[in-house]
Length: 201
Image (tube, rainbow, N blue to C red; front, side, top):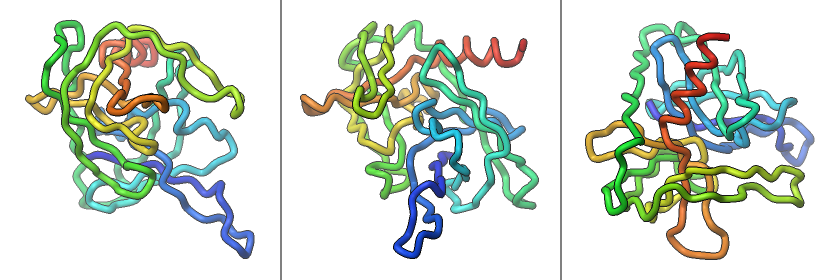
């Protein structure tokens, strides 16, 4: 299922915590392991919750942040919702991608519209970008990134970029603030390398 992250760091008028959709992610294992962007879960004081496309809620019990890439692994307890079936997505291969190839981006657009689906093509490969904001204190250089014209908006971060076979070929990461229809995704093979390191250590 496709998921949106929620944390309680925002406050209502009475000062109580107010849940807020902040990003997206996708399940990669029936054991409850979810991929998202590190910047989606950068608040180390926040409490995060996953909401599936079936509106089932799961508490995040552990977060693993990749120190080198904008990738985070979230662990949920699949037994938290008895009878709910978690279906992981199939990971593809980003080594053979071509410009012009059809892609699908899924995420929580603008932090409001869960499971939004947009389509487009791969506009470029091997891009290098600087993501983040120096005003927010987080800037990261990302290399070998996929460029796409599929609409990626704030809230789509961490969601899957799929090929026409429904395989994940990237993770939606950033959008250009200076242009239109210029979005970026981390190739899935980078994520596979992170997963290999995670499984070994």
